[in-house]
Each structure stands twice: as structure tokens, then as C-alpha cells.
Length: 253
Image 1 (cartoon, rainbow, N blue to C red):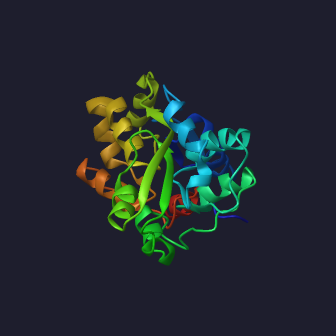
Image 2: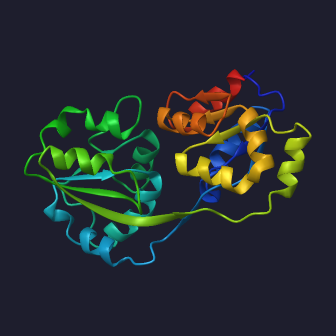
């Protein structure tokens, strides 16, 4: 008999196209998932800069993919243009990114073994010796600057291929607030700091108070710090940024 969520109702804030696996896991373990996408992923308004970089991947020594979205938006373009050059080393920050690469027929050579963050990737031995090398970071528009700043400081030449953009969705959350008022929302899952801040904006003052008092499952210490700064009082951090790890945290409730 698998462990049960005992009817726990969970607010899932992943983008619509990424929510289904977690929602299915919650349902399989006796919970109820409510989809409330707090992030929308769209293509760049101008593909020209990213295409110019992806057309010249053979110039680079390393390519770092920072999200599954980066993989899914970039790989079709890369494959149209002749696939991954044989000498290009591929790095993935986490398991979900590695799995996305595998779906596209690419096996990453570099990946942290635990605590899947930019910091742990940069701690790998390979990234200590990048002076004079060219690195491309495949990401969304306006992503974190830590990778580029650190690698540049270590002597690498770094470019960004920005292959998607994030937006805050517009949604009528009246029914959600009513359910929250009745005490029907037992937990909230959040997979990025931007998602959390979007959710705060979407909920308004009344909803923000509900969120601050509801168990909040986050996937990194960085998101935990953002949540604490927003006044959230019941924060649980997962072991890694996977749906299975989120489920494990929910089961602990």
C-alpha cells in the first residue's frame, strides 16, 4: 500500500505544460491537485540573437542548459542546424534538465550529484579550469547572472542563448480564494522564485495572507529565502527539484 496524502488538496503552480506529472503523482497518492499556473513560458520576441549563437555551437567548448524549458525550446533549433557538435561538452544543472536532454537524444557529461543548483555546478572540477574557453549558457530571458559572472571571473568567454521568456499569467482567482477561505487548500508547491512572486501578485492582499499561513513546498534554499522575505511562515524545502521530491515533502505533511 503506497503512502497516502489522505485527501490533501495541493495548489500546483507549475506552467500549464509542465504541471501534469506532479498532478498525476498527487492523485495517485490520494491527494487532490488544483492547477494554478503562476508562470507562462513563451518564445522570445526576437529569435535573432539566439539563432546566431546556436548556428555557431562548434565555436564553444561548453554548453550549460539551465532549465528543461531551455532544452525544449533550444534543441529543435539545434537539431535543425546540424545537432550538437561532437566536441561540445553539455552540462545540466539538475535531473529534470538531464531528462529533457535525454528525450532529445543528448546525454549531458556534466551534472551535480546532489543539490542541483548553479552553485553546485560551478563547484565541479571541470568548471574550475575554464580560462580561455568559450561557454554558452542556454536559458530564458533575464535569468540569474551567477553562472556567467563566475565563469567570466575564471577567465572564460561567456555568451547567452536566450530561447524563451517568462510572463505572469492573468487569471480570475475568485473561486480559488473562496476555497482557501473555507480552509480547502492544504499546501502550495513552487518551483522558482519568479513563480512565487507572481503568485503573490496574482493573489492580492487577501490571498497573500492565506498563502503566508499555508504549508509551502519549495525546491531550493534560494526560493526558501524569497518565501521567508515575503512573510511565509510554513516553508518546507525539498531534497531536490524533482516531482518525486515534491511528493515526498507533501507526504511528510
